[in-house]
Length: 349
Image (cartoon, rainbow, N blue to C red; front, side):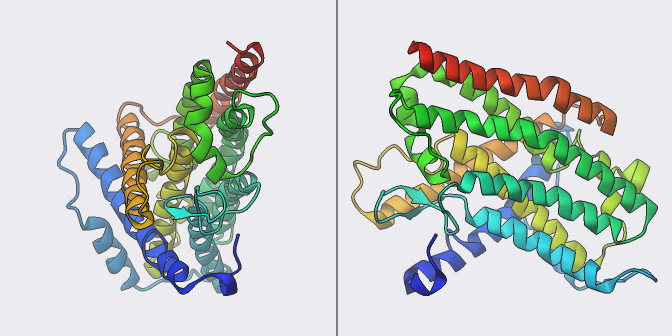
């Protein structure tokens, strides 16, 4: 990861615009619209207009943000900002189109060695921040929702880590037992398809892990059917109940950036990231970077659309059912995916 003082003016401009912070925020609003639109169409409804997410954010920022009596204004201000900043940091780690001068692989602005472990920490941080955001309000509905959220996040964190480990093992194994494992997102993204070409049977474990990651993504984002932490009929919006105005807007935008971040991780680890398949043909780096952004965006849209469609098919499940699903079903399947990947590689079939 480069120090800001060592980055060129062009790199800083790209980090702010496309494919940087501005691009991430725009994509976050688009993801919000896409999710609501697909969900509505699955229920035979029309869904919101294209600019509705932007209207919602602007409207919320113009409203008054009220702090309940006896509640710390400091924590109700700092925690939403920290939540937004954490989401944005994670999103900046996703390799989209920036090329490393040494490896020639796409890498994120905040990318570094072993960053795959750090992104898991960021995902866990979402659950911790949500927990504290609910607890500090002293509202029983919010505290119940935040406790459910933390329990749900902790339950799915291990299956998520195991599912992410499958593509890491595939790239590390590569087809040669002498190839060391890599724990950098950009390297996994750049070498995944080549590693599968060396041993196509490894795709079995990858498909299983991909399905698990989609399911866990829905749980981490508290999407239906895993929305018990914010259940409107039970908890009146759960841990969000006491937040309003710009604080609520910051949390909602942070959640949508979180969807970009987790969806981008799935694209990076399972779908080749921004890979176009023409890296050896197109010599122009500007054109290549432009195609990288387009292909990454299309893959991300596909992942979000699948997640949104799936949540139209399942009704809400209770928090105890969610935890049971994570530990008794999803975790064993994730272990099977890892064992299949290791076994098929060792057999060399």
